[in-house]
Length: 275
Image (cartoon, rainbow, N blue to C red; front, top):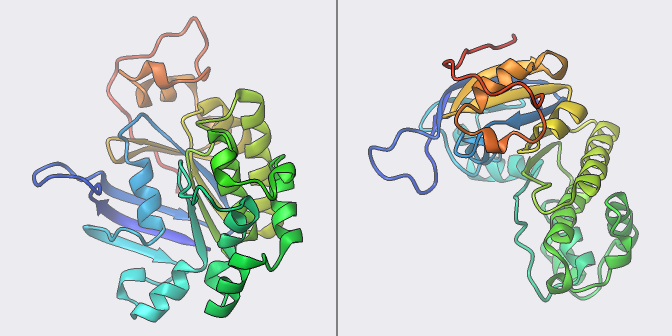
């Protein structure tokens, strides 16, 4: 799915009147099948960006186009169909605690199912092999029939990622998928996600706090700060100096991205964008 943003502004879900927009004048193009990581300090607007791309939050100004269509100009049924072609994986997936993992994963198929198929799958999962294969990609196949409330936080995050693999989606929007995973498992999970996205030709946009992971696994990096795009560059061109400016006054959020002997620079942000 192709993404185009033009001078887009959007408000945070809980913002009070008078509070600046969470996204301010954002413009970028993402080609179909591209894989992009969004990095930046807490409060940069990363989650709001994903919510806008998921058609869960309308822009307050500017334009969003998905495959050439403005979602908020579509009739209701067409908007629902467009939403069925993307999936948003939140940092804490909303999984019913008493549900079996196989059912939670197959919920990713709901946009393509009839009501009867969805109801039937609650009692007898309709495609157990697909759920098993998706879980196996994230080292969770042994949890196929486990109850969700018996999973750890990291296991629940990986169930959310597995749900994306069975969804009929052309755009995967993944919000901080590694926050509950140890470093080794985080590397394997993000590798699996990127590999599966590439195999399916879907567009992947992921927000990450782990800067080193983003640089290692994504060819394109967006640096977001205070709702503005600070840089849009190939990963190989993201320098320690750019990261220092992006995370100025947020040094604790840099995860091994800077050399130990190079402190963050206090200089003002520099806007850089590749076209």
